[in-house]
Amino acid sequence: MKVLIAAQQFGQGFAADTPPDVFYEDAGRFATYAGAGSLEPYGDSLETKDDFYPALRQAFTYDGKLYCAPKDFSTLALQINTRPT
Image 1 (tube, rainbow, N blue to C red):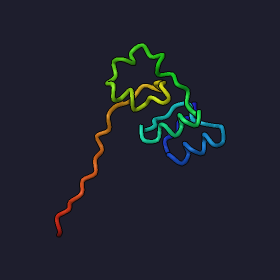
Image 2: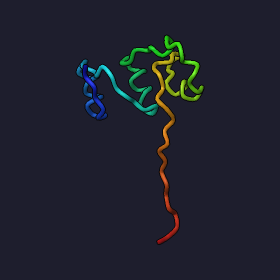
Image 3: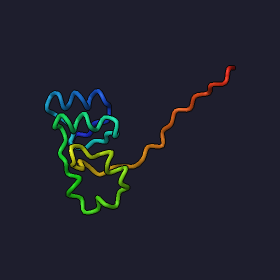
């Protein structure tokens, strides 16, 4: 089983037709791979798909199909101090 995490290796794997078997992709880049036909839309077959928050399901839905089980909401944030130092 191949597992890749680095974004550059991830894209190269799809380009070379040797994608990883298991991976995590954030919602921001998900549509790029779904739109290219690189992902298998298995999400609608999950028995527990309705247990996820609607916003999470929507984030990983493309062209009306839920592609995967969403992981979670991101807690990342950017803080900018605008006060002069």
